[in-house]
Image 1 (cartoon, rainbow, N blue to C red):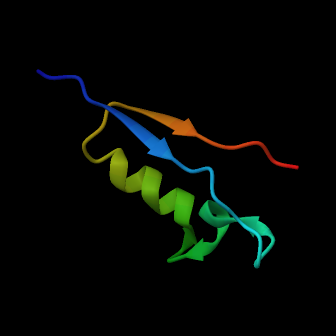
Image 2: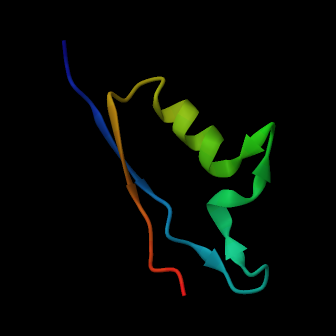
Length: 54
């Protein structure tokens, strides 16, 4: 059986909205919640890459 890791790039802050894009509401949670849930459908591990928050 093959082991699959996912690299999720999630470093985008929206200067106009003033928030981290991945924390925006989406469906019944946030965009990050939905992205992780979908990735876990085919990935064994997720590495989440975030940027510096000021």
